[in-house]
Image (cartoon, rainbow, N blue to C red; front, side, top):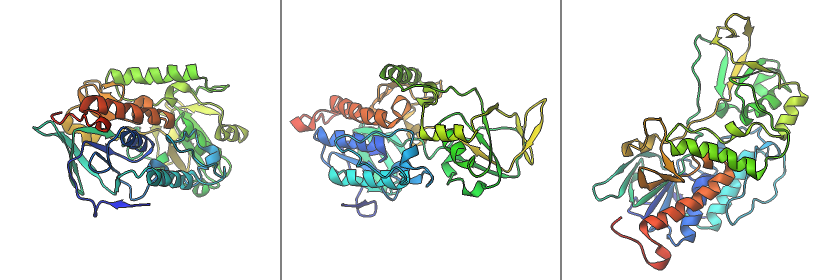
Length: 367
């Protein structure tokens, strides 16, 4: 496998810059290459991590392939059947590395993008810690992992607090009472592991919705449509999972068997020794795990002025409605692994429509 290090690749002018080499970024890169964009001259992928894997490389070692909340193969390369007990943080980065090599994708790392702005000649300027690139179009695939969301609650807790992004397994909570905050798949994973070694208290803002049967294609389309409607209006992104409910999974079954799914309403404040509900008791706990989700990593796009009054970026498919040069993949309705694949193809097709088809020698040089 050829490794392109930031110290060895000079920044340059290209047709397309892809930011991020997770599932969505690799899908976009694959489809750009398939449409005729050549590595380095036609497009480049800038990745902040030192090695392949995207967010998967940073997941808890306790997350096994058997308990992964859904995974979809990258286009044109099936994930070899893994041992279900192998940590996902080993399997998926290895798969991504093999994918980059198989398709000779020009991923340069580690490169941290600081800002993206518009030049007077209508090219996009991509400023990084390894030099400045310019491009006619941009695919932003930076995901959410680097922006964990921690809600604010009054008071101060003297014990251990961590976000799910920093969770590394149940061992440190052996024999302890742990509050797990959040109603999604991440919270269920933590409950299914920590309840086996300690005592858990599950709190959520709203009552969790448990989906009894398989998730139909029609239900999936409806859920994606609900999220897509928000991004079309420029509203803050909601995850697809937030509108689908919790479906059957190994982790959910394990949490139920351990009696960890007795949900309590969200506490009102933190105390020195735990949490408290107004007009009710204080509960002493040893730790709080905030499985409260993530926000899109899009701060580097601020110079483009894409955020609307609603707080989000108004979208038309994968394209930023106010700047057709910019596509966001793994954002909003395309935040799932299957959605990321589809978004990568849609972004590549949109870029071809904007700047021309390199396979036919029809690039529009003044766009």
